[in-house]
Length: 191
Length: 195
Image 1 (cartoon, rainbow over the protein chains, first blue to last red):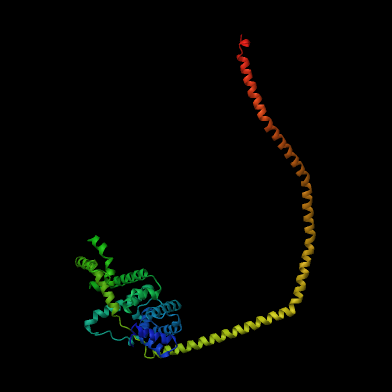
Image 2: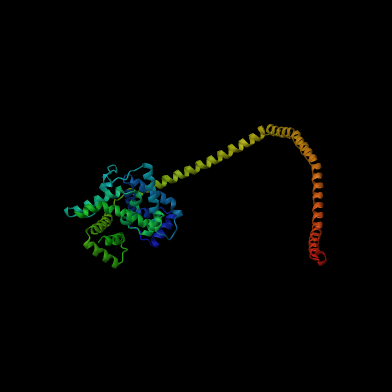
């Protein structure tokens, strides 16, 4: 899966998809599928693949409302975010650490190895587990902005557009979410 | 040290955002070199940011794109069915309402119209005596008020007359009083009378 450069090529592909070109829409799914799935996974855990598919179905029918010439990622993440919040409300999914998810149908097996995982990265994996656990215990409002900012690499402007929130609110949420993570990670720093 | 912590700790989040100017970053790092608490805070923040960036990226299953295409096809079918259902509901609803209107007009309307007309006539007829009684009462009151009106008018004319007389006579009376007083004084000062 390759990322679409947010350029004229992306605009052309989106325009074709809007006109009903299924191949163009498939390119969008290929380009953004992993990111949307990752976001749903970080937000909801189990059922992330179904949620991500539903996000793309919603995108397909919402492309008519998309303003041509703009970046697709904020629009797509807005759909994904709203869909995840709906799912959390509908299922009353508690904010559980992702590592404790056992009903995801072997999803863990599909998570690629982040790199060398021998003894050298024991500390790193310990931190990773701690961050995973801490992220799972954060309220969705903080989790969503942290995932968008630090996992998906969206800019503040894009997050603000995706969540339909003022930039100042986005910054405050990111700062507070990060402070909560810092508090949880401090024991690891002092060791 | 406590003041420095208070001043510099808010900068940690800006530093983690990469939005802190070089001077501020140098001050923060210099302070962190001396303050264990702020150093731990900064290190935990950097660790959190780095760990978030390095979180393993889960991949969707191999049939993801195909599943999305199937989902779109199914959604289109559902939408089509919903549209058909809506169209049928509109047709059936329109027919039912039309049938009801026609049936109502043909079966119910003569009786309803006759009943409504009789009802209105009854109301008018029963209201007529009441209206007549009210009219009579108003006329009686008006008649009773006429003499009172005459008296009031007469009294008012009388009052006006008295006022006119009073205002006409008042200057003359005042003049008479003034002249009489002065004359009395002169008479009192007369030598013949005083001798």
